[in-house]
Image (cartoon, rainbow, N blue to C red):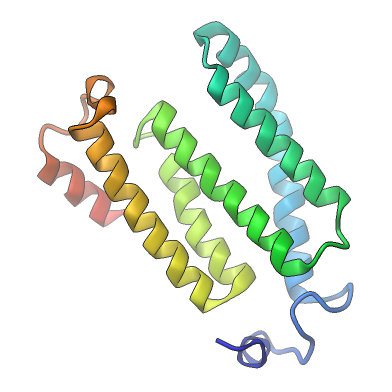
Length: 171
């Protein structure tokens, strides 16, 4: 979809990222501020959990997400599409690592869902379609990971691949 068509759907004549009162800028700012605030709040219990369970990879990922969120807040003059893309990659990464480290019945799938929705909201229909396809591939890979791959030993929830695919399809 072209920028002009996206502008018509949003009811504005401005281009993406132009002007401080732009709707997309406001939405992106709200997402980044809220996400960074929640990342900071979740950092302390996440730090304690990482120490207690020796999950150093999770601690590193939590630090990375928090630092990237702070960088997005500090570098507001960077191009809108780049900042929105980085924010979306962060949302996807959080969903993926929560699924990998805590299973599919954790909050990870909600983050993956948010990745698809926020892609459409921040970057348009084409980005939303790409995000949904990425989510489909991710959920299929995670289903294999937890059913037949290395994660199968820690995942007692589904008794068959068919049950996992059915549950994932309904998500």
